Length: 199
Image (cartoon, rainbow, N blue to C red; front, side, top):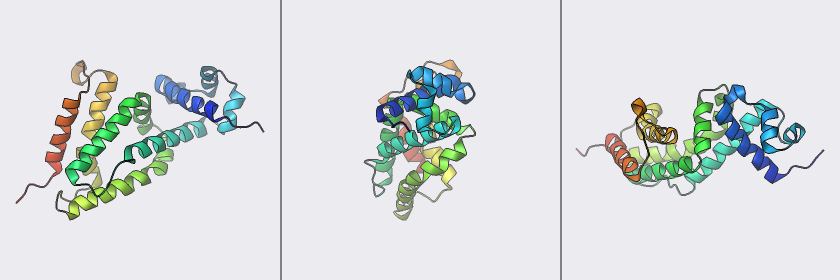
């Protein structure tokens, strides 16, 4: 059996994400990937069993890498407002520095691969964010909320702004570029919406 080459495997992963974003899951093939990497199809099969295994493994590896970066400096004991600001900064930085990954995960969310990938990457976020939310509730900073409601208010606005930025357009085709001012303004509105009003 031929040896694995870490640099070659990294190239395969990078080109796979680029092609998946460009061609979608239906238009993606191992042959196209091999050609884009300048290697043989047989070389790709050293690393992955088949096309499905490749997509799932690439998604898990990239999601794990981004999760580790996003949570690297996060402390679940932070006061609520400070923790939300830190998460917005960290998530925005990673997704703006990795625009292909951001689009790739948007595509993944509405694909048949979502279920295969989701379970492998959610636990790390769930532990850190669950503890953060629990601490904020215990300190009386926020009210208990269903997870879906909390996430929709706390993070969906940020992901929408990043999507608008990556597409270069917002609602009704208006040109859009994400600025620090817009990000900060939106984050503060989110904090205001979620924080308990003092009695």
